[in-house]
Image (cartoon, rainbow, N blue to C red; front, side, top):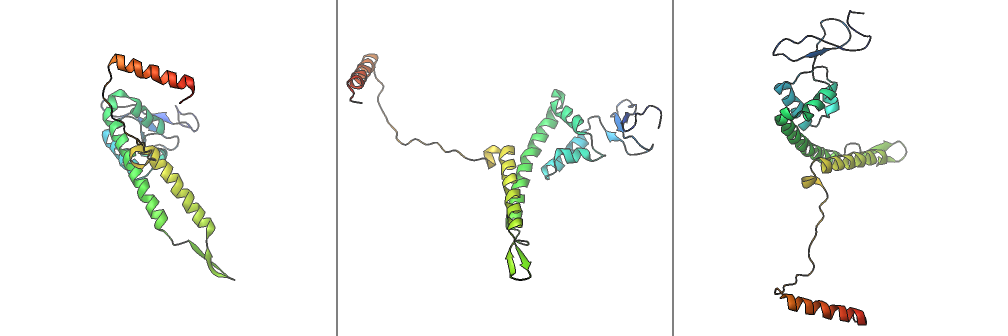
Length: 188
């Protein structure tokens, strides 16, 4: 085992001034190092991949990308506001990508039928149920990512509009008194 390494643990390389600190994977020397310092180009590639439908976990498992904890630190860093805004935009674009996937899944009828040797073509219920599950999961995700666009709309509307003239304090007291009298007598 190389000096300075713990079995299975990455070691950090010394960063040169103006360059990002790199995390070297445990293994042979000369392997590609994982970036750990903030780089606007890397941040932009992350956002593009998210918008295209890839999960942050999947992106960060790529050895050429920073680790998940590193990206989360970037998101929490107040100095990286532009990255946070771009990341939020990418997540909204992800909702649109997911919506497009829903249409593709719903329109794909390729495996809706299967050949049964005795009965001929029959409905492939397992495939249809799986497609329904995939659609429902994506609908839920799209609604969470962009609730104004893909969330359930709750419509509230007034059934009756009542217009009235403003009451003087004396007239308001009189209406309240009459209301209480009717209520007391059981009329209302």
